[in-house]
Image 1 (cartoon, rainbow, N blue to C red):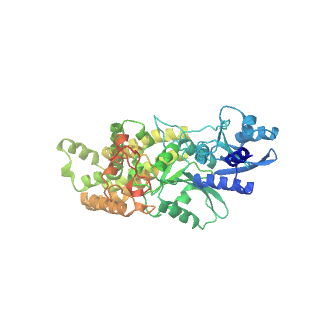
Image 2 (cartoon, one colour; image 1 turned 135 degrees about the horizontal axis):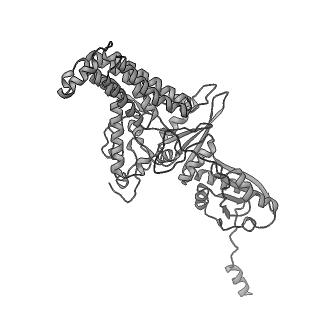
Amino acid sequence: MKMCSMTNRKMKKPKPLIRNHNHMDFLTEKMTAITNGLGNTQDLSFRDLYFNSKVLKIVHINSIVQENDLYEFVVRPLLENPQGKVINIIGGSNIDETTDHDVAISGLAEGRCLLLEDDSEVMTLVTVPVQSSSQTVEPENEKVIRGSHRGFGGDLTENISYIRQWISSEKLTIKHFLVGKNTRTKIALIFISDLANEEIVKEVVNRIDSIDSEDIQLMGQLEEYVEDYAFSPFPQLLNTERPDRVVGNILEGRVALLMEEDPTSLVFPISFFSFFQTSEDYNIRSTTASFFRLIRLLSYMTTLCLPAIYIAVISYNYEVIPVEIIFSIKNSLEYLPFPPLIEAAIMQFTLELIREAAIRLPNPIAQTIGVVGGLVIGNAVVQAHFVSNTMVIVVAITAISSFVIPSNELSTSIRILGFPLMVMASLFGFFGIIIGLMMILIHLATLTSLSHPYLYPLVPLDVKALRDTVIRLPIWMINKRPENIKNASQRRQTNDSN
């Protein structure tokens, strides 16, 4: 009798798998923990399914796992076999069971499906095969030789899935908004919660929420509501159609916006030097990338200043021309009825006409217009003594230089600013060019992108950040994220103390 009592005292009841409260409350706690673990991202989907006379929760990220694939490989087998064990019914080698919430959250972020039962601590992770994949086309304006050739499309969910394929972090957060009272256009704000600056995210959310418009259907319209200076000719947000470029900026702590039925993404905050960088810069050697970036910056200055320099030299400062070529230029200027300003304006205006016509016309005709139009008009105006041979050369170099700039928005702005700079050169020579450039520089120094300095890392000066601006050092030397974003985690490489 004593032995029995001692045995009874030593025996312990097995620990219950679930807590002693309502099963649905337990499921709710699980779902809340998963939602919080994924940064309250809004592309997380929950679906109820009655299995074994109990509630089975199916959890997945809808921007990675497609509904058709989920139904084919998970839902339909469970509906056809409503009794038994989940892991036996679905089967396959890509199915795991876990009781660890962190493992479950990581699995969801990697694109797996999670099954929760209302009477079990065990969670089932299922890899859903991808059947449907749409054809992707490389953006025409951002082509690269080496690297990804994928571009965004018009489907918002698919565009988000491209980003999630690169970033499997559970901290990647998606927030959805509807803008436009009539259009109800769907947009998505994308960032990594432990990298992005909370103040930037709050500011963007406030600007989106404050939009009071009946119709917003284009990304350009949204850009004007979000940017700091709508009247500036310089873009303050980065436009790109490349998922890899968006991913690179998100990993630096920046924020991206996507819109339904628009293949363009907006990235911010950015600096002026971001427009001289391309995705391919990080796929080639650092010395080569630095050389190309310097070429782009030189092309920018050429596009802006070369016509104005021509006017200043011909009108005021002809003594700077070498003696060997001054007579050649003098001969080309004979019999011209117009002063240098009018001569340059005619050619620049003609170039803009050809450029605009080439954009609007179908590709085969556009190529003909570009080649024939340029040759015929260039030859005709010289033969008619409307412009000089030298002016044709200047305009041709200016046009080629403008094509080197990676950002179409920045290229357009600098072509526009070239006209007032030509006027300043016509009035005051080189002194007028210097005054014009100083005014542009002052304007750039006052600009901000989401309240962050536009000329960073030059204003304010950050020597370490110069490693990845005009030049690019080897990737192992770029060990910190941009200081001006002030994100939670500045360091990229934890084993580097520099």
